[in-house]
Image (cartoon, rainbow, N blue to C red):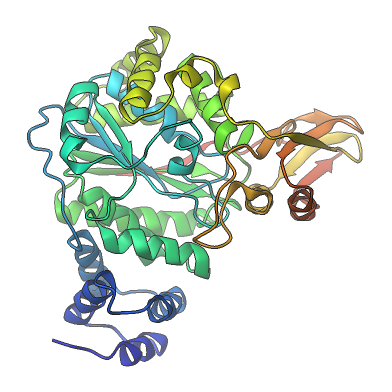
Length: 435
């Protein structure tokens, strides 16, 4: 059956509901390069404004899921559990989380994405490790998962290819913050992994695509519902993204912070969320007690087995393991600029969105889908919400390589911090759960 893409765009633009066959046709034709980017972009923009009904979302997600190959991990006897974040600033949790969970005996087939809009991407961060390849051949995927318990990869040409291409278009056309587009993107990738369980980190706040708890709850319930329909247990945890997570933003420096977590060090917020998420993933794998799961996670960190798993992962995917041993070998920016406090007081706002935008302008993210990311640039946060600062105290250290990009980034940071005379407490990290 053939359709007119122009008529389908008009229908969705005017609030119509597209039938399942039309949705299947769109995904099939776009994947086969018979629908141009500009028409699919127009449809995505219509979805941004009109949304998708449940009757549309199921077929759309299923079509994306079956736009290419689906993994068969039945030969891997361990429980297979993955985690996905809806995107944040300074959110490097997946990088220490995957080897920790693998060290606990659970297989983690982690399929991740690149930076999207103002948010960072796990693949971009991993590729700041010299030699690290996020393209794992499907023929070796199962063997690696079985032998070391973890694979961290992007979408291949044959696995959910429709989402890989739509993901890049959304990033470059301002069509990211949509519940149906986010949920179908995440769930099509994850359901293609043949999982026994999935943990979702649904970010809430200025630096997230979902700005309010109500919006995040709708997204979380949508994805949990898609998982239930497919028979995959899904747990969603709503977490704060009003300010950056941890003390670093950028690709190489977030790798360094991730390695610190694996050594039992690093910022408290990153460590706390990593431990909590790892315990949740063990529960999805069949553990029955949260305290026991947490103790096992902490043991994997303290014994060094999680760190050794990260080294094995890096070696297996072509990376230089000496960088894991010594993060000073990671790419470093050639210049530093320090932004200081204009007055004394307590930091009452450290805006994640402004910092994320500044990171993209600095070269740490993409303004267009073809942009090259500079792994060395980024930020070290010297003051976050609740911190007391004196006038002239550093708020952020900016590592940069291009003076013109620095000036553009500084413009985005103009109002990123607010300093109050009154004490201010940071928001709770975990804001809710949906199971």
